Length: 283
Image 1 (cartoon, one colour):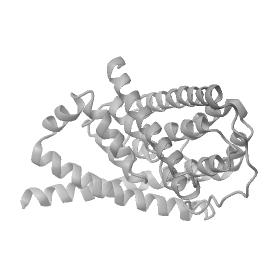
Image 2 (cartoon, rainbow, N blue to C red; image 1 turned 90 degrees about the vertical axis):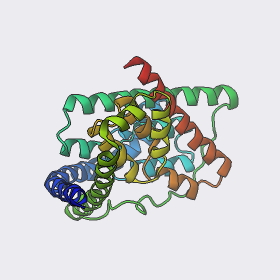
Image 3 (cartoon, rainbow, N blue to C red; image 1 turned 120 degrees about the horizontal axis):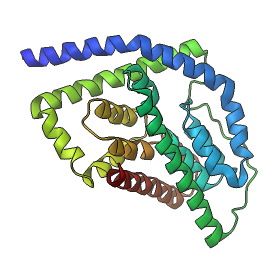
Image 4 (tube, rainbow, N blue to C red; image 1 turned 60 degrees about the vertical axis):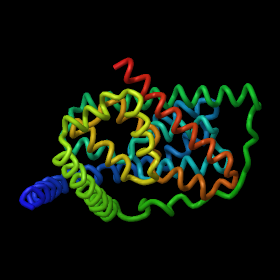
């Protein structure tokens, strides 16, 4: 019981300390997003064959629901599958604010973002190339633009939105950190790290499955595990590459082709896991 109380107290204290940093980070992000989100979407719409390049670059910046915006554009056939996948792969969801809050070295953050950017570009270009060779150019459709604010607080004031986002993520961090601390205390950090980090095949596969969780919980889990040195950078990247926030949920909701949606999800998972396996060998 004493051990449980200590774990709970430490988790609460650590979470409370994080809130001011989370709020400031999200306030800055909300301000940037309100100034740039519409311009970013217009740029993607006009990108043409350069879609995967621009998609990965825009996707790498943490914006409210940009994976949702990209999904809407893909459902309307305004952008290609390669561009959509490049956005999904580059999106890091809650990784950046959490790492900034936890004082992770900027060099580490930039390395992760750089690798995800490269993965997104390469995968997107190859996917579009294969589609053009096998099927030719996909005909674009002019259909009514779908509501992009349904899963996002972008219409609220940046202060209110930043408060909401900070509180939501703080709750996630508290719950996940409490679970992680409890498991580590029972099993032992070295044992857990050895099971996951020393298995170059199992690690990326498990991380990819976690990444499939269609909300910010997955990126919070993976980032906290990385910060606690339970998983390595390649394993982290596997999970974050697969994770596309609520973008996948929106894809299944608005794109009527179920078979196509399942293939897109499978392709995303395959690329994420394969990237992690390759990085385990290289790094």
